[in-house]
Amino acid sequence: MRRWRRGAYSSPFALFPTMGALHDGHLSLVRQARDSALLAVSIFVNPLQFGPAEDLAAYPRDLDRDLGLLEPLGVDVVFAPDPADFTPAGRRTTVHVAGLTDRLEGASRPGHFDGVTTIVAKLFNVVRPDTAYFSRKDYQQLLVMKAMVRDLDVPVRLVECDVVRDHGGLALSSRNANLSPAQRGQALALPAALSAAVASWDGDADTARARLVAALATAPGIELDYAEIADPDTLEPLYGQRSGPAQALIAARVGATRLIDNAHLRAVGPMAGT
View (cartoon, rainbow, N blue to C red):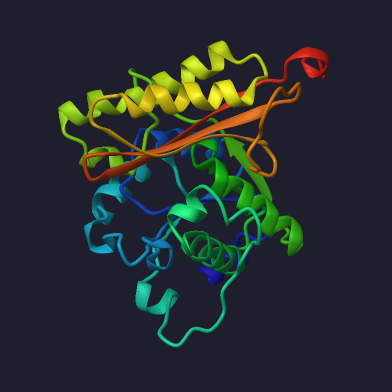
């Protein structure tokens, strides 16, 4: 990978990091990234971001399928390192972003973000991209990546990409493949609750949170993990009336499959036009 990068050094170069099991959401981002630069797609099922109660072995893997999907899109290089080489035994270094990783996904999945930041930092070091593409679907992860890049002066520009959804509004995710047809129908309660939150948002964080919780707590087949109205930059929970923007974030299980989603709540009142 480093030899290839040295040969392409003078060209703008983008990285799209993935864990494989590619779907239309990934491919949409690949097309977006491919428009402006040479593009590397990394495929690595990161063992460091899986907790002890999470089944790493069950995560879908089909490298040949993924390569077949990427080939017609003109990807310049696919980097798919061997886990034994990329996460060797005896490693001692972890990249930790304090604060942002303590709540929401960080609270539900202790150590998850340390695994993500450590491997993404390593990808940046090996691949040396000028830009890297991340979806807003994993909103907390996006903020963590921004903090890591800023705090460590990593010379990579992060590009935020919109959430890609299916025709029913469900955010595309590799984990959706684990849903039965009936469970997929139940999972539509997540984007429906977020859409309702956006439509009814009047700046009252307490009411918005209560509505989210009520909608998902009573939805058939949904086991709610969290529903939060948070500051869009810090993810600190918001309370009471707010004139500035907010972020609605939810996580829930549908059967054995854990799904996350989020939506932006625009500023209301004096800040709405800024």
